[in-house]
Length: 99
Image 1: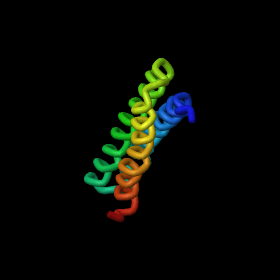
Image 2: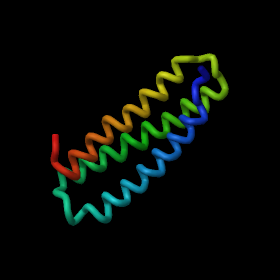
Image 3: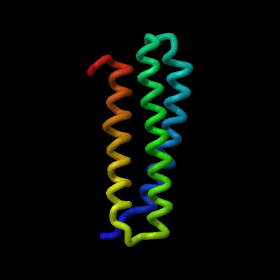
C-alpha cells in the first residue's frame, strides 16, 4: 500500500488554513465570551495545530522525494492524530470547560 504523501500535504494545508481561521475567531469573536485563561488555552490549540500542520506539509514534501521511507508515513499519521487529539481537546476545553 502506497503512503499517501499528497494527502498529508493537503491535510497540512487545510489544517494550517483552519488554524488561521480559528486564531482569528478566537482573537475577535471569543474575546468577549471567554475568560483570559481559556483564551490562552484556545491560542495554544491554534499554535500547536499550525505547528503540526506545517510539519505535516513537510512530511508530505519529503515523502514525495523519498517514498521508500515508511517512517514518514507514521510521522504523518501521528501528526494528524496530534491535531485531532491535542488541539481538539484544547479547543473543547476552552469553549466548553469540559476537561
